[in-house]
Amino acid sequence: MNEITKFLNGIDFDEFGDLIWEHINDWDNSSTDMGKYTVLVFDECETEGEFKIANAMLTAITGYSIQTLLGELAEKYK
Image 1 (cartoon, helix red, strand yellow):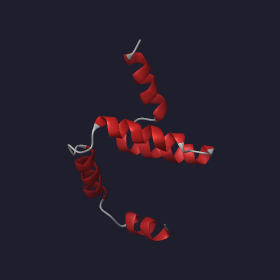
Image 2 (tube, helix red, strand yellow):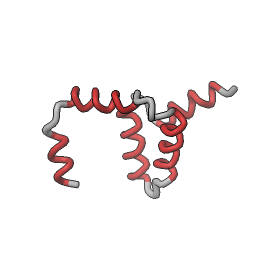
Image 3 (tube, helix red, strand yellow):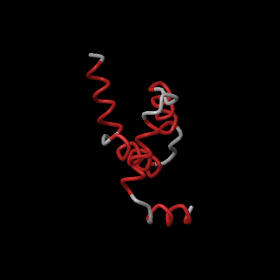
């Protein structure tokens, strides 16, 4: 894991962001899969620390926390 962290600290953030965006918009990546695997990640969190990490990753990808996204979802189905 240390090697990956060292590698990530030396990459171009814009290029990495573009690559992530490319994969998010890949037609093989359905919204159902994204929703399902996001729920699975949070479901597997056993500690507050793991939850914070998962939430930070979701925020990094979407710009919003799980709490905000769930709030938006609740509003949608009112």
